[in-house]
Amino acid sequence: MSELPQGLHEFLAEAGWGDAAIEPIPGDASFRRYFRIREGDKRAMLMHAPPPHEDPQPFLLVAQWLSANGMRAPEIFAQNPREGWVLTEDFGNDRMRDWLDENPDGETSAYEGAIDALVELHTHDPGPFSPYDMATYQREAALLAEWYAPALGLDIDAAGYEAAWSEALDPLLERQQPGVTVLRDYHAENIMLLGDPRENAPPNRSQGLIDFQDALVGHPAYDLVSLLQDARRDVSEELEAEMLALYVLKAGADEHFAADYARLGAQRNAKIVGIFTRLYKRDGKPRYLDMIPRVWAAMERDLAHPALAPVARWFDANIPDELRKAGGGTIT
Image (cartoon, rainbow, N blue to C red):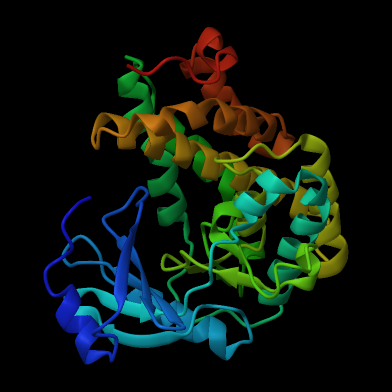
């Protein structure tokens, strides 16, 4: 077990949890660390997001906004942003992903609950967050060109890549005004099922939100793509289509929504391919490579939409067909 961060015991003592038991929780793809805190019948979650690599202020801002608008973000018990400490409500262990692993027959109802939470989120005016503008879309999509292409030894047309994305994404920029709050990582591993676990159906249990510190103001299709084209979990094309239709019905989305969904699906998946390659090449985390074929398959489906024609032409010219058929190829 790794050592506890310096200052942890002092922060807990100041927060009134000085005698608590501390249980480290395995991390993921960031510098943040999490600890489950128990003291008698009380429990909490401790996040350490140490500067300069991390900054807990965005998490605190988004949590406050979500709670003020009736969404289920964890309550903040104590904080010291300068040192990177935040003590929050513990949502427990019932991640939607884990619940589905044990209850596969409840998949439709679980996703219906997640769709309802998104529809509710999108009824509110957007929060005080930065815009999901073209520069941000381009910077994210460029991760595929910056990390994936060199890892496969590909000589690509980088300028043409940027131009293709500009042409494909430009039509949705006006339609995402005034925008909605986009959590940016809304998927089955970041949705907690709250309430009485004896009520086994997710619609009877509220949706707890986590990992939302990167929120921006953008298009309502983005978090829907994140949920239904999940990099970490297989979602069938049939379920994706059913839940997309459900969102369109409940949110009253317009006739452009399906095209914008494909645009943002392709953009997000290109970003993820780049990020997962970077996590391996730069950070020595090979487990993310196993997820790339799933992401690549979703991206190929998105590229088949006419709205992505400029980007699809670029892929045809720059990514060899044998790599695409192999789910992106083997990164070594």
